[in-house]
Amino acid sequence: MDLKKQLQQSQKLAISTLTGMGGIGKTELARWFGWQEWREKAYPGGICWLNVAESDGGFIGTSILDFARVHLKLTLPDEGELDVKIRYCWQNWLAGNVLIIFDDVRDYQQIRDYLPPQEDKRFQVLITTRKEYLSATIATFRVEVLKEKDALDLLRSYLKDNRIDTQIEAAKLLCQDLGYLPLALELVARLLVRRQDWKISKIRQKLAEKGLDEPILAKNPKFHGEMTAERGLKAAFNLSWEELHSEPEAQILALYLSLFALAPFPKGMILDLFPDEDGDTVEEWLTDSLVHLSLVQDNRDGWYEIHPLLRRYFRDKLEASP
Image (cartoon, rainbow, N blue to C red):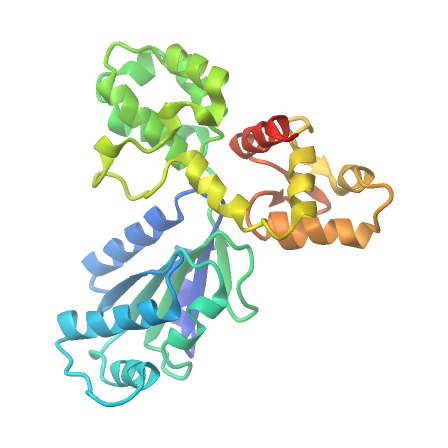
């Protein structure tokens, strides 16, 4: 894949990001890539996975030290600050290419001080993030929703009873309802496994009635340990929404956009929502906030689009507002 090519052709520390909306499967793809490379022995120096999320820098640094002690059997110096010990780890890491994966990064500042040395090209870094842009020096790979065929295959991978093929038209409509989003499809599939007598049309009806508040789209505790995703769908969307708490104008814009038809729309329609505001200001709310957080997709050439489940999320917020 292009990601592997980019990581391994750089003449210095190579850093790439997997970016996209919540529930798109960034963590799953990073894990798949890591396991694939491990099986192919592409990283003899090891693969180090670091959960970042809301962790502070100290926790990230300590995690690197713990990995070095446990998996590399390094004896770390007793003296020195955290940055000194981390530098010792990089300098004494096992020989050969090394892959460091930082999962769920909210801000580049979280990891900047814990990156391997720039001059050592054997270190390669993969980051998963919802942010469209982290740094000008980082290559970005956008994770897209599934194609219809792949979405149906994902459902089939859970449902071995032929329900998908015997109800193929309903299954296609279900995939469309869920916007071909991997997390939503997985949650629905796991429930259908436990509800052998349910027709797909019943699932669609329940989702139409309750939307994101339908328990089907919440992570069932019974699936704990089986799923990579740590949250249900609404909880995943809430994380991005909460990052806008200091940007009420961007939140208002998102709510207004939920009134648009479920189709791409031009920038001009967005600017028309705020006739009394400077166009550059509205574009800042759109691009630097909503697009940056993967809440709105920039289709280029002045056209934008909202995922159907995010549109429903915004509409629910709008209807609940005073």
